[in-house]
Length: 261
Ligand SMILES: Nc1ncnc2c1ncn2[C@@H]1O[C@H](COP(=O)(O)OP(=O)(O)OP(=O)(O)O)[C@@H](O)[C@H]1O
Ligand SMILES: [Mg+2]
Image (cartoon, rainbow, N blue to C red):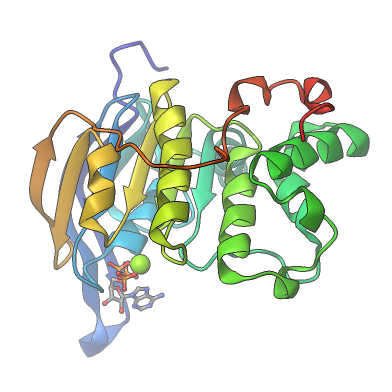
């Protein structure tokens, strides 16, 4: 399958049509794009230009497309639904624009959900979820229900859930949309840290300040790529008192987290 030089993502004349008859239109209208492993891409563009639609396709949530999408050298049209959902649960972490927390599950069950597919025991899942929640300063909210959280807390839970599985591709749809600028930069440092560890990150944002963390900035317009700029990421200095992601490197082994605040 993939060799070290195989791009993670190759899109060729990708199109996505919504609607039927006279009402149909292309939300994605001919995108050619190659994304290499380890890139940190920021996608910008006006509301309705197709950013979420594109992320859904990249995250294998929507495979009803025209053109081609190759993920690590394999055309997704060749993959069964079962194989697609396996890749999604093992390799892709999705931070949704609308959080998508499951309302009837408490915080820790929401976060440990992706681990079910890994075949871990309930105890192991809970320990791992608990460790990442502590790293996001949500340890005291483990047994809250989503509706009992603030918007910013919900967003941090959603991010913890996306990262608990240690996915190699992270798709983030306005991950800081509900956070103030200080909290935004802390989340961005978390993503930046994951980028430095070699993960591929594709993030939609409306905030030009946050593109400083990215290695490439793509702007979209009317379902097409408008501009595509490579750059050196700059990690702004924040005056954060307590880094939310300080212990991420140990998050592989939750048992080492026991002494963590
Ligand atoms: N399920 C759907 N059925 C019909 N049209 C859709 C559907 N989802 C998205 N669209 C349309 O596709 C276009 C792109 O929508 P999309 O959600 O990708 O925009 P966006 O760039 O993410 O916008 P925003 O910045 O507001 O989140 C819009 O015109 C939208 O109305
Ligand atoms: Mg959107």
